[in-house]
Image (cartoon, rainbow, N blue to C red; front, side):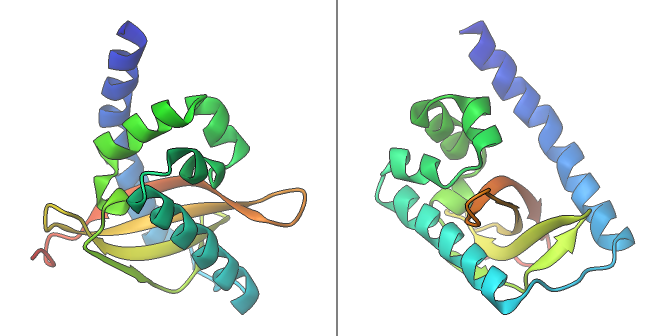
Length: 151
């Protein structure tokens, strides 16, 4: 119980810091597009995870997370709690539009324009990680609120 409360508090504290770091990275790091094959792979993995969220297939959704993310949360149920608590915009999006894949702070990144169920427009930055078998997994997501684009 205490660990859960501490984890939620930590997520709430780190989210604005992560968003600020992403914003700084966007301003200071030149972007370079990924190859078309990599961008297609990113979109395939992310789309499959969002489809799993929509179907409440949390074990499947959890399988698209990188090994570090799976280790951090341990179970699909803990992952579900985190996603539905802090990332509902990507778990239940009203709008979900891929933008151009890029590199942020040296990490392959897939930005996505989303409008969550709350009507707030956001940009989701999906950090991707290549696995030893050549496949891609999601290694984290940062949400940035777009204050000028709410519906």
